[in-house]
Image 1 (spheres, rainbow, N blue to C red):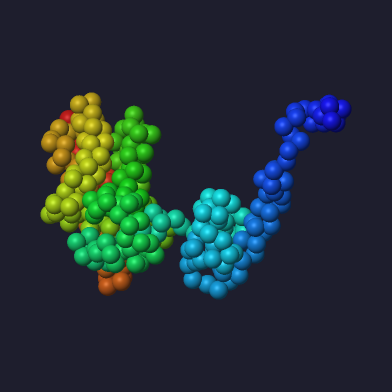
Image 2: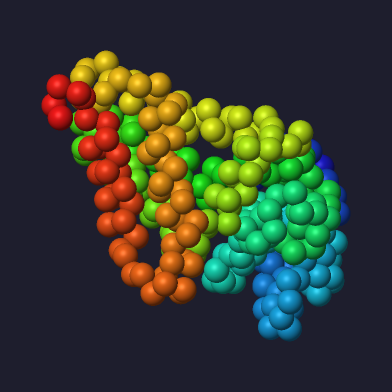
Length: 290
């Protein structure tokens, strides 16, 4: 017996390893079983996807004959499963919510937006919607950041803020236009909703509207004020000067579709807003240069 123990210890290192348990034996088959289970999930998932609709994690797990917990041990998310299948991942819940909200707000305004209706249109649960966007204020802020000219205009100002007004302001106007008509879609509905939210300051969006306007106007006010101090622009209240800059551009964007359809007027969008900005520059010339 001592001889047997000595030989076992030389071969396997410790005496304890003489006593193999069922767990020890079964563990050697786990990688193979996991690979087979993963293949089964992928096979069943292809069948589920071929049936159309928007199958859930529960649908995929049920088709593979396993629990959601087992599914998540193999695939961390729905996106991970689709990537394993070499399918283009669908937009995640946040993107679907924002896209649905953008369409609804553009058509009917933020006041008419129902959070329950939005959840249905985005294909998410109410719990998921409120987890991502606790209320209309948070949703409104996210919409503005995703679809409005706020961030693009801020980036332009940051990049060329050392340039003179005749370079910066036309580029700001063109950026404004490009954002509103980005990807061939018309975002004037969101701009209109933003205007009414700012003017009415509804309780559930007042704070969000203030933050958005402060962020955009703050950058422009700082630039315009600096140009007035350097003598490149005539001095006046910076807020009034910006209202006279944004107002015609905003009005042009709001009325452009009607002008084209009813009056047959065709003006290149970027050319039009650049011309409006040049008119503003002429009006803002310092007295001594006129």
